[in-house]
Image (cartoon, rainbow, N blue to C red; front, top):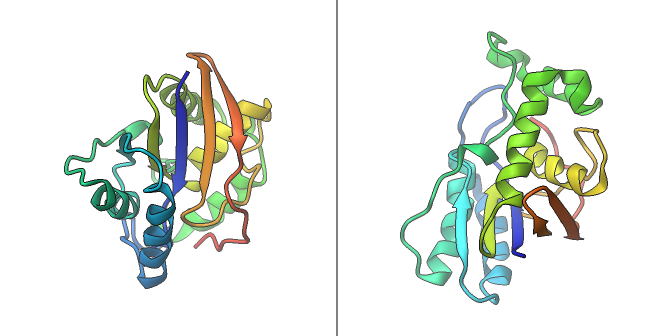
Length: 185
């Protein structure tokens, strides 16, 4: 059994409808630093990040605390993809509608995305900190609770959700991340 710490990235410098890969803003860097200080009290362990810049930048604070240099990237824990061909300025509205529903309602490509996130987390062979995104972490929470909704928890930026891997097909929710009304922008 492994313990997995799922960290939502700090606040991004731009919205999902204006920049496909923003870094962190000043508040996001502060959030990342605070979370890194808390997690650095744990013994160093594996660290993995979504390929997106806001996650990599959030991870860099913990990497510095632990003296780690190489940050493995996992596409499996990236942000939920928007539908192909959707204009950038329509992404937020699509996401808001999707967040009100279930994975099944979104269809098989999104069920496959969810299953890929859950499988990746469930098969961590060692204790791991994973830097990821709101919807991806909710996919894991949903798996733990057998809940098909896209949004179960309103996870704050830089919050930490903790799960244990019971076996390669199941996860156990240990601790839910800090909740907040975060702006989807």
